[in-house]
Image (cartoon, rainbow, N blue to C red):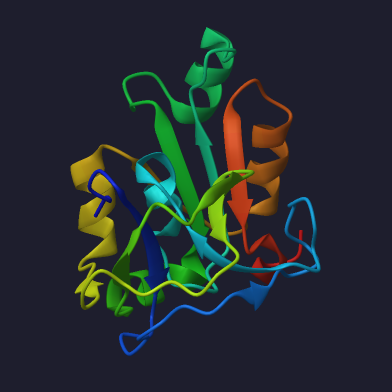
Length: 177
């Protein structure tokens, strides 16, 4: 599930959204102005970050230009691709059963903001939302290793201390380390 040229995506468990209105940014998000309301979306490269139930904590790491071969081998694993996503066992059932939808939005009103894209005006979807489908299968088809762990924090600590590129979403929902 990736956007086509001229599109960005917004993932939601709500298939009834007719128009996206800017919302206030959570205080924990890292953008220029946390008091500016935004419509959030992602492009092709960051779409896999959202192939999860909305509240699911996830730690993601991937090979970047500055990644050492030692870190790639130690954290991702030899022969295991270039990207790994990790969730906790407690979220596995939700990953299997969630009804996740992708809304295709026009790219024009969006500007880069950290790893996401934001718009400050209301945005109408380009059509009805598409059901994303089996999230485990989506990861497999994309060649993204999906790890299921007892707790994320130990993995996260290793990842952020490495030369891999990374992103953590909803980590506040993870089991306390």
